[in-house]
Amino acid sequence: MCPQECMVPVLALWYCAGLLLSSVHLCAGVEECILGIVGQPILLPCLYHELSVNFSIEWRKDDKVVLRSVWDDKGNVETWSLNHASIPADAARSGNFSLELPAVHPREDGVHYSLFLISGENQSSPLCSVCFKVAASFSISLLKREHMAGNETTFLCHSTGGYPKPSVYWLINNTLQPPKGSVRTLTEFDLSSHFFSVTSNLTISVSKNDNVSCIVENPSMNETLRYTYKPNDDEPVQSRASEAMWIFSTGLCVVVGIMVIAGVAYQIHLDNISKRRKKEYREEKRGYRRRQQNREEDEVMTSESRETEL
Image 1 (cartoon, rainbow, N blue to C red):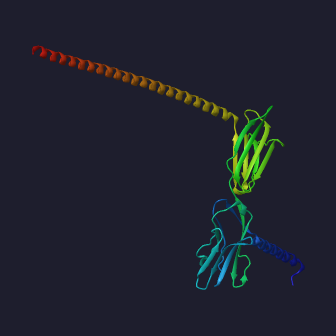
Image 2 (image 1 turned 90 degrees about the horizontal axis):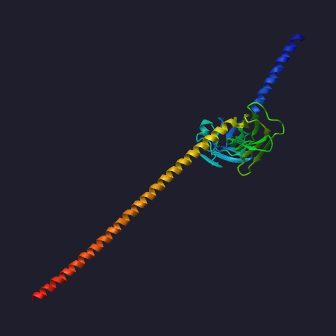
């Protein structure tokens, strides 16, 4: 028997061992969660090597069967699947029963996939269970400035096509949060596409040198979109654009004017050539008529002189 003084360390050891086993049990029961990107294929991992002959497996999405494969004692396999879901062709030999889905859709967010082994009339408990999370990138934020009455200015930030619901916040000069009540954010959910869109308005009094930033965060994608409005950068860009447009317009007008002048000059040249050719044709025709008339007169005079001689 251990003295009373030894009992405390022993009990402490047993207590720690019990906590450790409980922790291991809890960790083993934690369901594996994976992230799927909308529109991309995804692989749900599952490895199991303790198989017998004449068995079948089923992958289920919640309570709905999405894939069923049946093996016989000769190694033949017959597979049925929904929406082109698949497992490796050598699954029975390799023990790799991972399920591949060709594409991810937002409506599958939070869905559970489980693998069951069926042998005869017996069905196992889930061999693998996967928690399914969905995410999609938002479009680059669009930031506009709209002037209002007085010294206040409204900034509009808009982003679409993402999943799940994003977080939106504003910064003034990269550090200062806007005052309470100055931000109004609306998040909308599209029932047809299952995507989110977000529109946020900031109404605040800022100076012409203040930079205003809109940040759209999607933690599931570990993605942060940032758009910053810099007033000092806008005016030079606008003036350079206006100057370039003025130069382009002036050059275009000069080119068009030269082309019009050249066209008119060429048309006058063609008209002069045509008039000269017509004049030459008329003169040639009159000359031909004179020669014909003189020839006829000569013939008449010749015939009269012959008659006189006779």
